[in-house]
Image 1 (cartoon, rainbow, N blue to C red):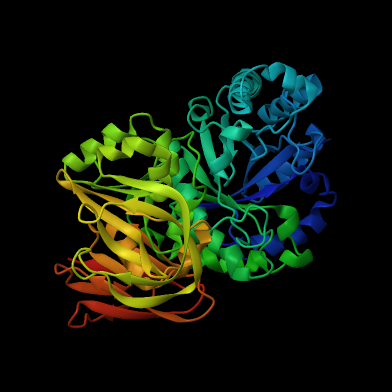
Image 2: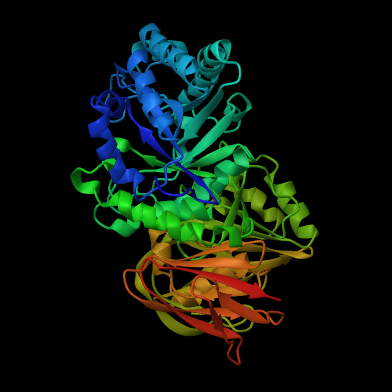
Length: 567
């Protein structure tokens, strides 16, 4: 087995069918080597139950013993699937038989292991007659949140702790955090009862899979759930599904999970990654990725970026943070309003905070900037008049060309084509009261893409979000550079490029660039006056700043560059 990594540990999740299919341990040892030869495996999660299939305790103990003798730690796993319905059908938490399945699985795990992880099926989408009756006049969200929290306390935790009081019980949250409330996931209250949490960082194919998740999500959700349970977010978990179109798309999940400072990385699952099927190349490739990251992760500080406030039960402009992240904007998500931050980003979901106007008021009076989206402005409505007279209308505009400004909005300058036509909401604003820093041209008219006005000692900034969030990628650099400037004004470096160059910032003056473009692109970095030295740490190259304090970096698709700045 390979030598361990110094910056993180790794695990492999074994589904109950994976475990039950281990019959001949000598033969399985050869199969498992396809994973364990390229990847140092510290732990395996061995599943007792999934989709009405159990593993016997006797067989589980023999499998546990096999891995323990190889120096690999073992933990238990449960997947609460197996219900009746379409798509991914959850169990019914009003059904006594389903309740007893999970009680039994929890008992078996507690008797066998000191740690248990719940796979990200620990939700409910059941609408059977019993659930409809139990819901009564409550909304589905209210009912499911209450039902799941009660189930957590009375069935999962009480059962596990009565048998093994020191057991570490982990809830793994899926990557689709925008919809947690609808299915009973509650990252506000559940971490108070579970010992630890875990993060699903799967993004797969963002264009053609049914979850259509931007790749930056693998990083953002890792940081978002760290904010939900600081210090108790044990790791990130991803899989190879919908990644066969491009091996780099599989590896990117791992890169971004580790860039988000995961303590452990779990590979799902044994059955997919073994030496069979379309995912045969995944284990050798991820082994090289782990080796690469382990060489430089200890050079990174703590992740930083503009404070992106999203309350735990928010909805609106789903996954917009990740679309912006794909445009090179570094974000650090917050569950609580970041009152001490100099730059606060608020998308539509932040409007769920009933005190948001007064909190923004205080931020800007103290010299901070609040960056909001057109969706946030529309959701707040007339109350936004506290800051500036701006309204988002129901009219739309089709934009093909863009302009910036060289005098803080007094004039728009030039005309730059976008990649494709973009449909945006028309924002009604008062000229000479708020200033257009970037705009889009239409027939005999133009419409604001970025607006900014002074408020107190700070600024209120408004970004127009296209109807299709993916069309942010079609904004040209003349627009994206303005938007990035709002988010990164306090950083010693600015990224100047088109979209799909990701930027990850850390508090020790290191940062990572990653290209998701399908072609090689030269990007520009501009540095502040106090920067004295710029070094790319992976390859040991020192860059010399030109007369404009800029450097140019050619980036191939799928590459990462790690920079260190000296002040």
